[in-house]
Length: 131
Image (tube, rainbow, N blue to C red; front, side, top):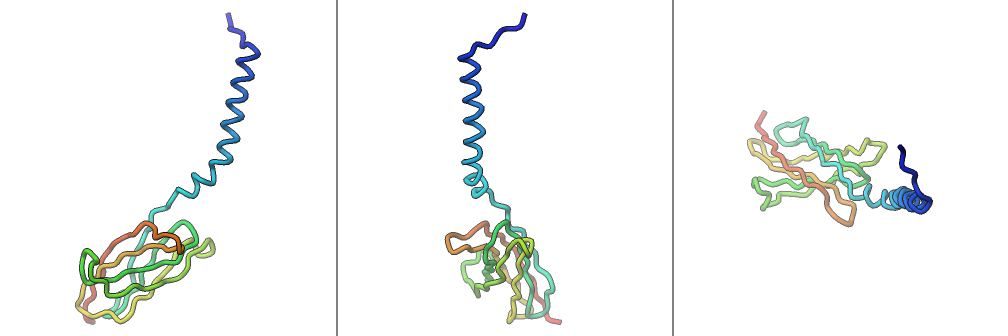
């Protein structure tokens, strides 16, 4: 035999469900802001003294790249500011790095800056050789 739900229990369950739905609507922006897409970076068009670095983020940010001849990036050669990424660019930006020395391995770190904080650094290496 089916158990009958009392009026007080029904109202309590209804209020709990409505509260969960309403709190989700208010909490959703906070949850969305904490979500971060990891930066994906790639190097291409490498010549004896230049390279292009691509990176993809998840929001409108300015792409920055640190370059160093040291693997742990403790001796920064230069910081290069790239394009601002947006929905129009599929949140993908590029940095055209020029003036590099041939026969040198450069280590890089890409990250995004929104003037508040730096996000998700991604490290890699570029090996240059003379042509």
